[in-house]
Amino acid sequence: MFKRWSQAVMVAGVLLLPVAYGQEKKVKDQAEFDLIQLVQKEPDAKKRVDLIQQWKDKYPTSDFKSERLQAMIATQQAAGNAAGMRDAAYELIKEDPKSIAGYASAVALTVSMGDKSPEALANSEKAAQGALEMLPTFTKPANVTDPQWDAYKKDVQLNAMKALGFIKMSRNDYTGAEEAYLNILKIMPNLADVSLNAATAVLRQKNDARQAVALFHYARAASFTGPGALPEASRNQAMSFFKKNYVILRDNETKIDEFIAKTKDSAIPPADLKIESVAEELNRELEKLKETNPQLALWIQVKKELVGANGDAYFKESVLGTGLPKLKGKVISHTPALRPTKVVLALENDKDGEMTLVFAPGLPGKADPGTEIEFEGGIPKAFTKDPFNLTVAVDAGSVTGWPVAVPAAKPAVPVRPRVPVPAPKKK
Image 1 (cartoon, rainbow, N blue to C red):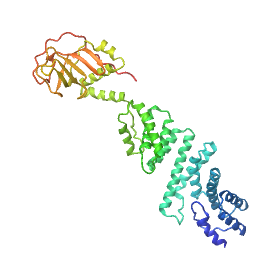
Image 2 (image 1 turned 60 degrees about the horizontal axis):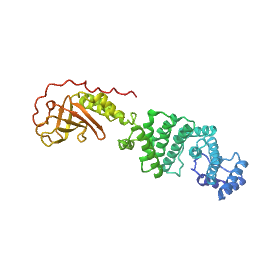
Image 3 (image 1 turned 90 degrees about the vertical axis):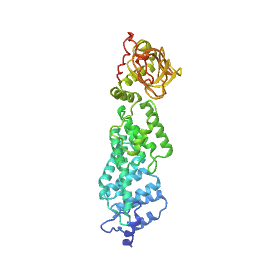
Image 4 (image 1 turned 60 degrees about the vertical axis):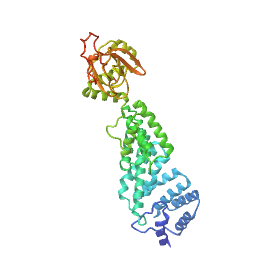
């Protein structure tokens, strides 16, 4: 009878995963057998805990200590006693370090219990590290399929890695926590909750230079769908936080879709990730433009000052009555239809009239919209900020590109120095 039960306990007596042993185990006597029967038949979890404790007190050296501890873990779980479950898991790790069940419960409880006491964190760290070290050595039970075993081990691995992240965060080691969460994402990228944890770890480092990295993780967590995605409410909350802080860094929402698209390709942020502010982007593009189109670069600098907070003062002090350098633009419109005395030009693009050229006498003939002309030595006369327009008196003879031949320019009239280029502001 004892032999028959000892074989059965290998299949049914373990309430987590069954464990294979190299030799047969036996109960000490009929009284132990009867006590085990009571444990198995008791439907009330709390009463079953008491029975398992009696079994332990009366038979501390039972051959079935490992199974008894596994039964205690499962029974404490059923009774809703996380602390009792954790204690049994730590005891099982000590008693039977080759049993995956103790590690599985200990690492799962680390995050769910949220115990940040030094003792709890130390024990959790030991269990998590032990689980990861021992994972390749655990033996698959005979009655468990390979896919089931692989899935179970993957869960244990994930919970152990999450536990290490939680431990680092609890100790305020935010750099270590970020590394722990990135280690998870490298092997299990479709876990939005881990991306969210990584974002929190980066933000708590309080490094302004790495805010884009934190927002990458937020965007990933907010936009990822499918298995591993956050609940809809959590996704919406993460997206709201991401957009709010993206606008702070960028100054507006431009290119936000491009940034989110980067998170679709990988859960790991690119090494050169950055969110350029609009001003930074304009300055970078302006430096390139100085090499390829210095005329336009100069105009953009002047216009930037004119539309700024001190634009009116800048116009009066530095632009009004000065001689403009050679500039090029496209015709938007002109008046009158023939021999125009006013021509509206777009300099920075093909559609926004930024400058009105005034001629006396007018230009010969007419020009179609989009015609590109160039002029030199224009004298600014007036300026409006909204809508933006700079009125410039121009000698018709300085114009090139007009469809009808223009008479040669008159001798230049002395003017004030050309518009000074504003020096780049130090950040």
